[in-house]
Image 1 (cartoon, rainbow, N blue to C red):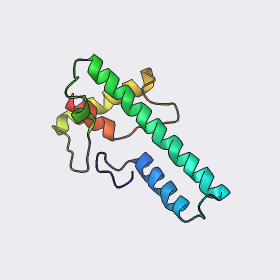
Image 2 (cartoon, helix red, strand yellow; image 1 turned 90 degrees about the horizontal axis):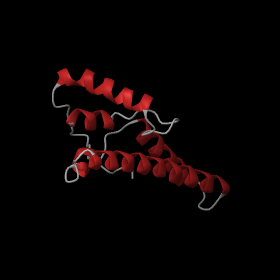
Image 3 (cartoon, rainbow, N blue to C red; image 1 turned 45 degrees about the vertical axis):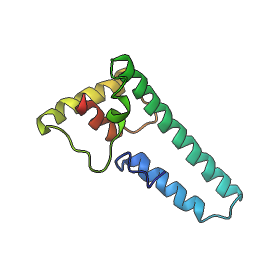
Length: 119
């Protein structure tokens, strides 16, 4: 949900929010409403899949108890040390380029920069 504070506002958050706003302006069950509803569902599903991939990886790395808290990023979240930001960004980009953790159409979300920084 767009008002959910368990993440920071990223491009996919704005896209989701905009789709919901536009859908809510349409007549319910109209063709346009149904198309937008499908797009909203699809975007949410992709986000869930990416989060689940991250959770599995974190658990496989031994962070079973911490996985959910590591993935919980809010607007109040901060980078632990600005010196590590560059290194965390490099690692995230490498993950995006060399793995399938993110779908090919996915724009790299800043929320995962916070996750990598925490590691």
